[in-house]
Length: 170
Image 1 (tube, one colour):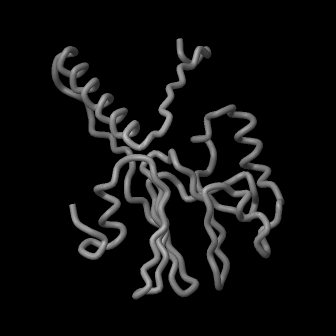
Image 2: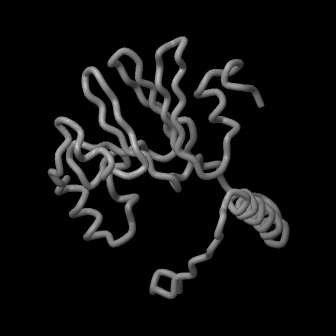
């Protein structure tokens, strides 16, 4: 595990796990970096213009900026309303507002001198069929699940759990 100075911003992200939305400004390079956690638990919204960038954890903080406004994004809103909570059907870059973008889960953004680019640093990969007995696979799954829950509870002030009783849970 290397530091930002050793590996650069994208290199550091490979080792980070958990919930985060982060910004880092490298004064020497005059470059701003934004990143969002692997599965998108922490939101990160942004507006990019020719000579400035603004970002926030909620889109409302960006609404009063010049050229942003309150105009809704009808496609996003229709998909959200029609798909209930299945936001994976939406464009991961979109937000409820036309002029505000969302940094997708597992992505980083770099902005320097009015030029920006975005790249994915993490995503799920199909690793083929699992091998082993049902008991071995269940043990491995349990270990991974408990490790993930433990990681997420480390930073939680008031951890909670939601158990759905809807038809999708049957």
